[in-house]
Length: 410
Image (cartoon, rainbow, N blue to C red; front, side, top):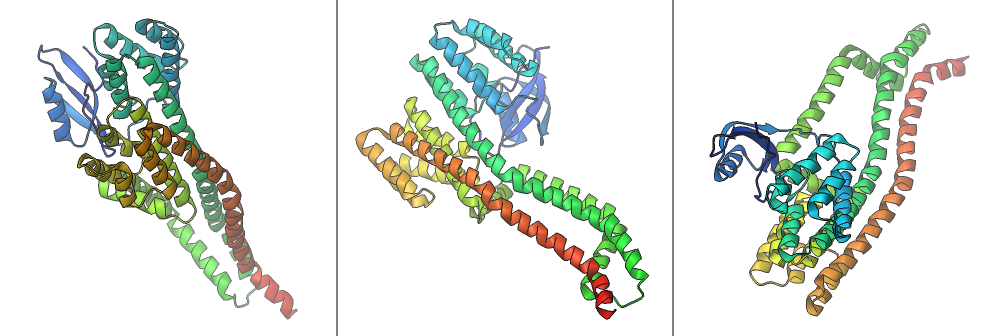
């Protein structure tokens, strides 16, 4: 049975999901694969256009990348670019790259693309058959490189773009992971404290026979609630997290609300905004340098930001530019881009060096993200320590108050 991976070249939005399908083609050959679409109806329509009669179609709500990470795709792109620059034929370059992959899943992916290209499929189409790993931006630039005969240069730009993007993602994740991890550990410690430590103190304090102060009674009451309903607390917490993740995965409205809220956070919002601007300008610069028309390039720019606010704004900017408005004017109306970016875009439009100026803007904001992420840890750490210290001290004082009172009486 033939095994294909979502052979569709249709453009997809940030809210698309991955569907697994099985069916038969025009020749009656059994096929299966995956593709991205906004809904089951859109997936069936895309497959119908390819002459595939679908028998089963299921949605992956929480699909896993099968062990292949974006940085590995970036490394493969860099390898392919280097070999093509060295004059190695395309199929041989794929063969060498496939043999050099340490991860079996990555080797299978490279070999699958090589087989499709060897069978006469265009390079961009072969990559589009693996939408989990190669998005519309990637495949669109490959198609432009094939058409212009500058595939090695386009792959080099793609590799640089992916490396820069992954570097930003890594810094953002590192900045966000630390406080979340500390708070998670604090929650576990607090739960253990309430379930096991406070009951021991309660038994000891009960032997005093004196009236307990209000803070002590409050801590004991909370502990009794935890002891009595611990299974409900843990179950509701896990269920709530699952429900939130599933809702955010399937609801465009909640995705937009989440992204708007993220940009307004007092400490992290500025970091996320700079990250979005860096990725927006880097993506647009990469596509313009590849010769992609501005209006067409703006279709993919918003998707690369990972934030629906910038996705929606990019769509409006594209419509305004398509109607004849200057890019800088359209960007200024969104009120999401700082004056420096607008000035650099204006200079680029006037001098015909828009891709160069956008690249410089991306470089600047990537360095800003570096500095902000580095300073965030030193800013957050004392705040978290103070917060946790206040909670722990409050609990200890509440538990030891009866002992202090007894000492005062004596």
